Every structure is written in structure tokens, then in C-alpha cells.
Length: 121
Image 1 (cartoon, rainbow, N blue to C red):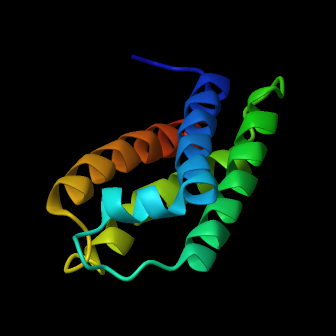
Image 2 (tube, helix red, strand yellow):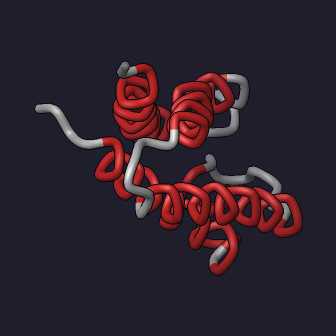
């Protein structure tokens, strides 16, 4: 399947918006959903994380409307998504194993699409 850069950016924007909304609007729920029981919650940090993701989602969404591929946004998105599993693994004692597996698959898939589109000549 060969998706256009604009389609890839739309997919990334939807995903980034979803993750952002969880952290901004429902930090308590997100903490219990992603982390093992007893993990201390920190709504402020989760909201800052959501804020950063919202900025990336906005950049992805805006770039998806451009007539040509925005390599900078594609490559930055790819880097963000493919390194997310590494960040989760550094917290493997806190994360639920199923969440690491599921979210790593999602992030690596979207990150791979972004990098493929961004590196296309």
C-alpha cells in the first residue's frame, strides 16, 4: 500500500489528537489505563505531555492540507512515533505490558509510514 504524504499526515494527526485528548481531558483515566496499579499519578506532567502532542497534531493536520509533502513534519513525526516505544520501555516497570505492546505497534506503524513518506524522493 502506497499512501500519499498527506494521507499519512492525516493518520498521524488523528492518532496524535487521540493521545493528546486522553492526557489533556482525562489524565486520571489515562494513568489507570496505561500504568500498573499503584503508579503515582501526575496530572500536571500528563497535561504537559498532552499539550506537546496537541502541538504536533496541529502541525500534522495543517501540513496534511499542503499541496506537496512537508518533509520536516513527516520526519519529525516519524522520529517522535518510532522513539515512543523506547520511552515506554524505559518505564517498563510502571507500564502495563499490554499497553507497551499495543502502543508500540501503533507508534511503530505510524512512525514507519511517516518516515517512508518523508524519505521518499
